[in-house]
Image (cartoon, rainbow, N blue to C red; front, side, top):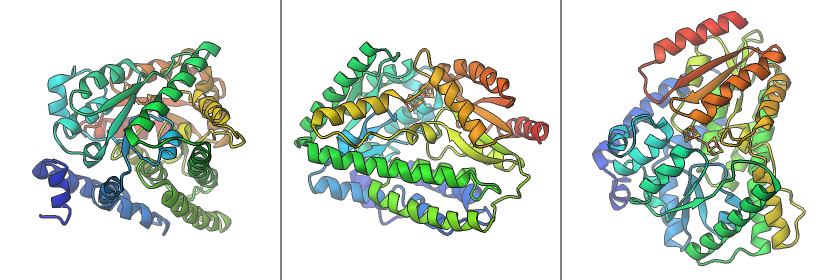
Length: 424
Ligand code: BJ8
């Protein structure tokens, strides 16, 4: 069916036929997983609207921003400091990489044993399916895991790519390296946008991004109530949308959602009965529209109350200190905040274990589901340590490795149901 956005998508060089097919599948999937839930908060209508317009209205806004002289910067990792991008009056979008479409094309130029996230972003580009990638003036990659690092070399044949070097350890010399990298990024962003990052602009950008983190922290505090007032699926969606919506509008909308949630908590209303086992997810990021595992968990008699993930608390836990006055002080504050990210690409990575245990205890979960994308070595390796750390505090863990295909849904459901039964 023709869409009013066809002309815009054509200009972006999308494959209209394949793209239409993708939107159709996405719409169906969304209806089954999200709209079918009973007792959803009114505030989720905003998220439903954003999702229904994910390749429409938001893309139009990006085109309008570009026409007005602003640049669009795409990212794949929470290490890219959005503060710098916003301070140069550019728009940052998290490129999703959460769908299987495009996998066949990706496997022609990438090894098959590459994680689904990497195949997804390469496949989306090669198959001309993603209007976000096509709207980017620059894609900022990073040297986190080996797969991503090498994939950016290949990706740069198809899109303008800039790569930040992320250290692998957290010693003083690593911090120095990271500081130099943040400054190098600032230089490149200034070059691409033709704007200078001034102290005033950076201060405001730090505030805007912190406000978004704070509203997500508030959401996480509220959802921890018992009975649980909002589904894990819905909170995951909020986190996913935070990566590409306008930050100020998003913060205001989620603040309204939190007000409603607060009411619900006050009245003791839950999305599920009090005795439904509370679970926490931990591990690899789940990008839009990767809702498979949360859906399986929540349709197996459990409810998710936290995500220890980059599309979750890892990207919202820490704020950038707002007391810097000079540009140098603000850069230092940014460097310090980003160096606290506990991605499995770091070694050693004790903080992540401590953070997981603290989160599991705070949220009073009955168990943790560790989620690793197949072929993701950093998270697969750490899963063993996570299990051991949780065992010490008496929290059982189920380790799941999967990708974006639907082939293993039944098998995963059986394993999750058995786990839920065991912890009940
Ligand atoms: S800070 S988690 S967003 S790197 S799943 S591509 S690690 S093989 S996504 Fe990540 Fe930044 Fe770390 Fe977060 Fe590689 Fe693993 Fe694939 Fe991964």
